Length: 264
Image (cartoon, rainbow, N blue to C red; front, side, top):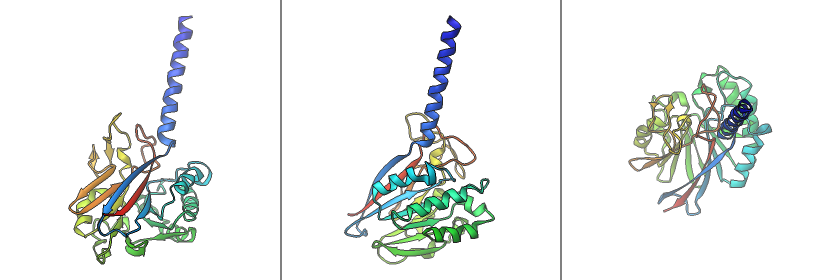
């Protein structure tokens, strides 16, 4: 009978591991941040930050994700790229359905990530995003809720294609996919930058916020998640929702970020 107990123990252990992995990749966590600034509007602004979906579906048409977004009641929704995956063309349908539903919750402002830039269908996808209800900020800005929201095309980040987007004395928010250029965003004069790309380090050391690896930063990346400061600018990095080349997250659940911008 010993072999039976060993077998049952192994099966039970395997089931627990499978359950843990499923929860790590499918149970969305919501992270709240409060950002205070003397330049913020009097009434404040609630910003939902969505990043790195990579075509992942949390329920049909991402309705579980959308339900959480609706409950948070944001004033605007910022999408910072990589909502598709360059190797999976069907991701476009998932991404467009998600944007369509999110646009019914609040105005959606989108910037591209590296995966959109690598897609040969980006121009088509950009048009479809606009039809779905998103405002695509490829080197443009909009005045919304008393702040300036600017966005930089991912391919233009290294060339400094965002310097002309910071305007006026009000609060300037930049949407940019890559977090490692924080010093350049700060130099351009932005007050807050929202980024993704690093996936929180994809795998994190248990019971810590230490990520293992991020593209563009290598092992134990500095800019993988959370709030970082550079001069007078703060940068909020989302751990994202989906996966890229590495198919699994460990100790790093999918994340929605809710930012409450308030008057200092």
